[in-house]
Amino acid sequence: MPARSKKSGRLPRHGNAIVTVTVRDANGFLHHYGDIETDLGAVHEALALLQLKSAAMDAAHRDAMGA
Image (tube, rainbow, N blue to C red):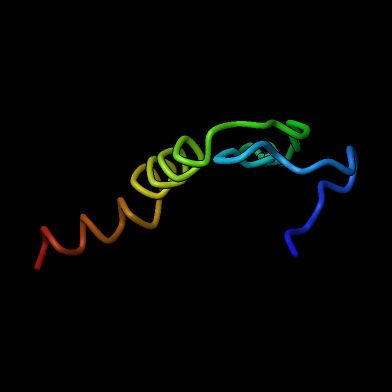
């Protein structure tokens, strides 16, 4: 059985997901974005973009280019 959103107690519509985003900036501040219902495909695309823009990906690319 799918997990329910803790705050709202509701499930997303078919094909959607309820996501909660918490971001820590360079100064250590947390930015919290509450429950957002969005298309599941948009979630996948956003996560892929975050991975592509990550510091780890940059380091791996630099290592590969230097080898």
